[in-house]
Image 1 (cartoon, rainbow, N blue to C red):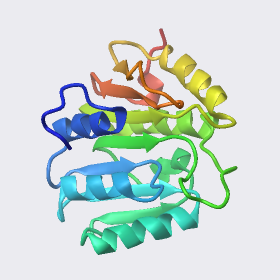
Image 2 (tube, one colour; image 1 turned 45 degrees about the vertical axis):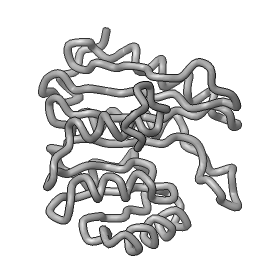
Image 3 (cartoon, one colour; image 1 turned 30 degrees about the vertical axis):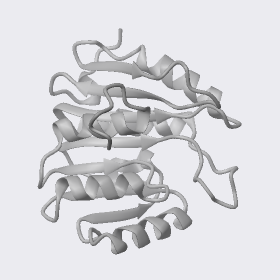
Image 4 (cartoon, rainbow, N blue to C red; image 1 turned 180 degrees about the vertical axis):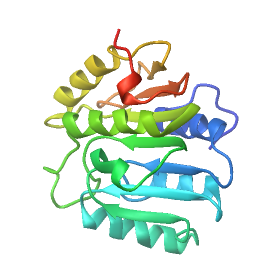
Length: 202
C-alpha cells in the first residue's frame, strides 16, 4: 500500500479500516474468499495466534485461496468453509473484530453467472453485526457493473437505511471520477453491544 497516497482507492481503504480495529490474535471473517487476497491480508493481520473464517460457495475459490495461503505461509490460522456466508453463525462465535466482503463474481472463473445475491449478503451482514465487537468494522466492496449487481446494490442500500444510528454507523466511500463501474465501499462500525432481537429500526 502506497503510504504517500492520501485518498486511497476503495480496496486499499477497506484494509486501512480493518487494520485500525484488528490486532494480532483476533478473530475475523472473510465473507467472500474469492481468490484469497483478503483472506491472506486478514491472516497476516491476525497472525498465527489469530483465526480467520473464510467463506465461499465455490470450491474453485477455496482451492485458489488455499494455494495462496500455502505459498505465503499463513494457512494454519485460516478455516476455509464451502458454504454461504449467510450461515456464518453455524461456524463462528462472537466476538469478532472485523469482516470483509467483496461482492460480485469470482474473477477469472469459467462461470461468471455465480454472483453474490442481496438476500444472502444482507443476512450475512446482519449476522456479523451480532458477532462483531463494539467498535468493530465490517467493510463491503460493492460492484454493480454485472447482471444482478444493481439489484443487490439497491437492496443493500435500502437495508442500510433501516439500521439504527445508535447501533451502527454506516459510511459510503467512493471515488467519483473513476471509469468502468468502479466499486464503492460501505463501512459498518458497531457503536454498542447488541444482538438482532435488540436492534431498533429507524
